[in-house]
Length: 72
Image (cartoon, rainbow, N blue to C red; front, side):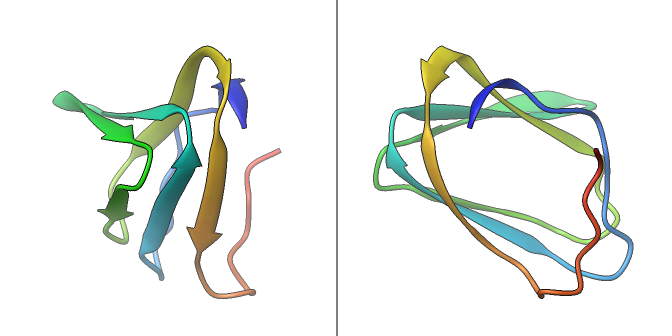
């Protein structure tokens, strides 16, 4: 992924992001978590979030049910 996605949440499922290359910034309404190469972050269901980068390409493996709907 690269740049900013959009603010969103998933009401029925958690999401797990595993970072293989680069640094991901996970914005929450009250804070930003920095997730570096080799690290993971879980976003609990129902929590609004916005994944973004600092302009670099970040390689992310995203774990979620295949039924998860995505924002376009």
